[in-house]
Length: 114
Image (tube, rainbow, N blue to C red; front, side, top):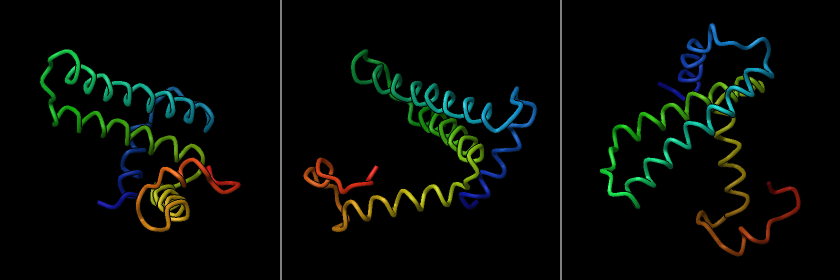
């Protein structure tokens, strides 16, 4: 499955959600991303500091939930995921042309580099 095929399929499950317009869908999407990513960090916290076992399969499923809300949020603002992902790679390539992270380049960004 391609990234955009995932998004198309993911949007099927947004049917019937309580949203009246793209703005409501966006709010639901970003709130959902925060909630699901919070579940991910909670799993890591419990494994690192509270003695819980780290269940990789459960974690992967939570990442899938983050992806679903990402797909919904991108759709709400009129973007497909492939475009979003390519924009991110283009931004990182411009920021780190050597192809690796640099503290200096992270701290001293060019104007307009968000």
